[in-house]
Image (cartoon, rainbow, N blue to C red):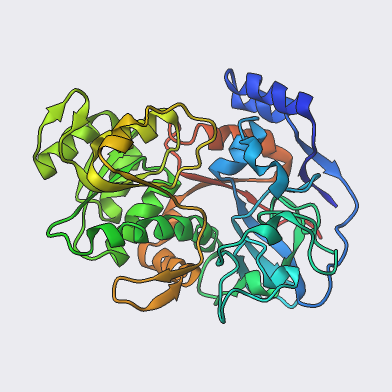
Length: 399
């Protein structure tokens, strides 16, 4: 099979990190990602399906890998060489179209799920992600797209377990379906706001960043967290317009988010910190600056949700300590506890949300795998180029 693959190479990761500071396209050429022909991944066994890729998105974690900025934390949660791609809509051999829920969970590895009906990402023990499956057929891998045994979406096909697949109707277009996975991540982060704002009159939730994940969080807040006032800081005009269209109440330039939050909540400016602030801030960027900004605009005893994936950051935690602010990560999705006390699978919410907002409007461009350098450069500069989501299109690839 001819596909994109990342092999372990400290030299290539180092070259990519240096090159990415100059030009993302150079990082894609010199880094660890290669378009190459390799042996098909072995059939894992019962319960696994071959999924023929139709569309596969490029996300921020993928770009971090390609550009050499991924955290060493994940070293034990991946197995090389692996084919990236976890935002996928594909087709089974019988013609049924499916969306991938990429976490390679308990059932896929031969373990009992943590509870009946659990999603792949549920559970409070991640040991199965860093070890081979019970039968030894699946190597460590945090998700499809980071596991050498399964393959990934940046290929004509890959293996997925039955527990990871969501069958979709004919009237759900591929261009909408490929946005379901990032929407699920944003909805998961949005629902993390509810415990903090449940008993608050006129709660304010700030969202810093309005790329794909920030927009997904806004959609989740508007649909599933009742009564919140959503204040968004966006960097580019098209992001501001989309945030408003999806349901944000106030949208400003990112550098003016602190002022907008202050207008909504009152309070005073003490140095660069707000004396009051947002009840919850969702950081959809994940840098040292964005995390620091999120802490300083969140009120004492509020919550900061890290939706954007940070790597190594430098952060003065004095304000976090003094204000008793909760800093909470939002990784992927699973089974959610809703504001009304019921439970729901995040992916089911995301499929419904994708239809409600016609999420295909966020898909800005698609590329063939042969044009991966251009695709990755476009994704890395999506904001500057007026784009949101970039994806690979394998629908014309012979299998």
